[in-house]
Image (cartoon, one colour):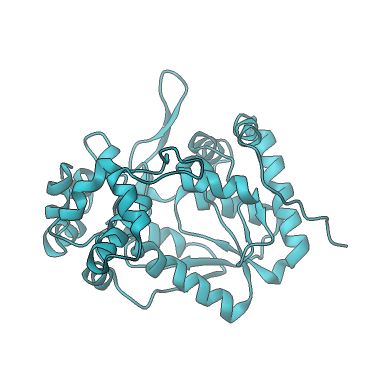
Amino acid sequence: MRLIKLSGKLDIQVLKCRQAMALKDKVRFSKRRIEMWVDHFGEEGVYISFSGGKDSTVLLHLVRSLYPDIEAVFVDTGLEYPEIKQFVKSFQNVTIIRPKMMFNEVIDKYGFPIISKEVSEAVYNARLHLQDGYKYKQHYDKLCGNLLSKDGSKSPYNCEKWKFLLDAPFKISNRCCNIMKKTPVHLYYRQTKKVPIVGIMAAESRLRTQQYLKQGCNGFDNKIPTSNPIAFWTEQDILQYLKEFNVPFASVYGEIKQDENGKYYTTGCQRTGCMFCGFGCHLEKSPNRFEKLKKTHPKQYNYIINVLGMGQVLDYIGVKY
């Protein structure tokens, strides 16, 4: 018997209340959403999106505590830390898929991913607008601070602070994630018809918050139905879960400790994802991800900074490396 699907747009206060829940209640809530998803599509009709990072490690542990045999899928972009790939290979029933383009090909054709997906998309499309004078005008307006809301007021999505990137002597775009990660996943869906369970948190960005408010934990009606049962968790929840449940995680994070205020932190990397990604690096305190990469992974550091040219990009936006 299938459970009733819960759908509909959520209020921001609902998200805030869920984010404020105790961890034990979040675990119970998330497991219930996972059960609803699997009950609807069946164990053979779903898979766990497993990146090897701490968030997806918690997701994998949650899902397999209920359904030990559900397949996990890892997208090997070639941009992961070596420790992440080694960690992923330590698990059973993990399918590895790969993109058709390499990272150097993506940046040569489209450009570097910097600042944020929103800003990189605006720069890429605004430059296209400047070329033909018609298409993507809204992206150019966004960078110039002229984008308006429906009521005629100035849109909160304007990002005129980054208008200077239009004159950058290198290409910029948000296409990397789509090509390296999303396209292989979409192809996998078309081939298998399996739907994903992902571990993306709403607190990570405005776009992800909006997505959660639109669909909640289970997006049954998405173009590709997607479950995101830990979307309302926070990074503190993730670290607390790993610590309390003694869940193994990738060594690149170091250890999980608590400061004098009880806040959890990792002694190694705070984030993993793609080693060469520039999204958000301008917000990090020194030592930032690239400064750390220089010490921990000098070979990869030299490749991205000197061979691929990220050094000139970071110089242009004022980020140390």
